[in-house]
Image 1 (cartoon, rainbow, N blue to C red):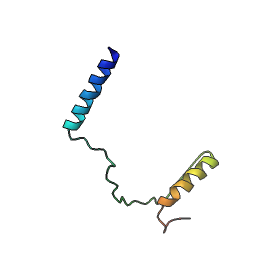
Image 2: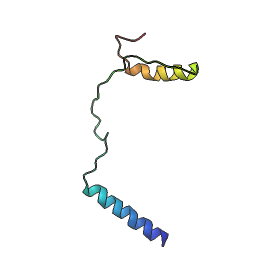
Image 3: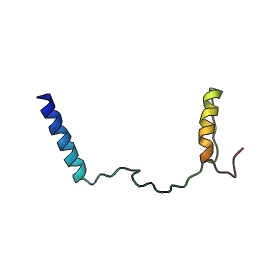
Image 4: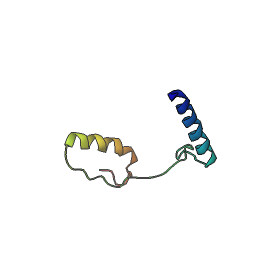
Length: 65
């Protein structure tokens, strides 16, 4: 009985989502261009350095320090 309810629920959700025009936000891998100008951090230095190093690829090269 529970399996039948799940199948019906999944089918209904699929029909509703396909009928409303839902499209995932990042389906087309558009070239989104953005830069991070500055990063201000507080707290644990180890975590802050990890975050800064991962964000470094998105930082504007003119403002990198």
